[in-house]
Length: 100
Image 1 (cartoon, rainbow, N blue to C red):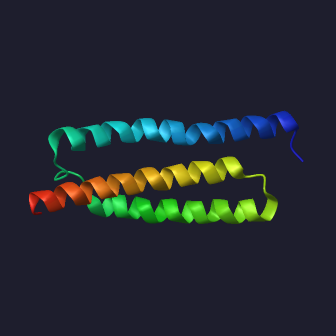
Image 2 (cartoon, rainbow, N blue to C red):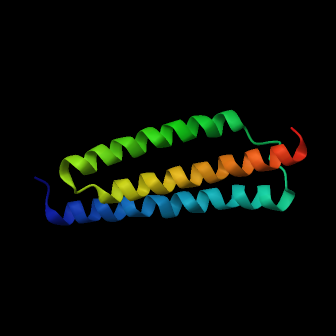
Image 3 (cartoon, rainbow, N blue to C red):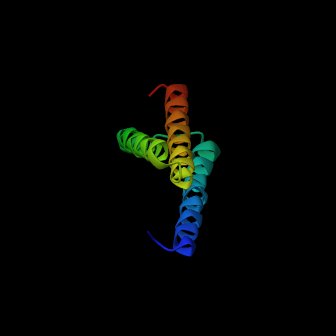
């Protein structure tokens, strides 16, 4: 079994993932909202990221059900899914609005 300090450090780092991820999504969202266009954004890539994020969330949920100690991974994966779905929604909204 790993040392308690190592587990606490790993959990803290995992909690930082959605915060860092959010900081990466914000410029993309800002550009879409500012230009009111999603023409140059690959919807196919974002849909693949959606599936990948959902797989990661399923893994995190199963791990949490098994040992109830992976809540940082569950929170991180949930936040990532939310961010990816927000991006997909923005792309679809502005493409539909532009008649694409």
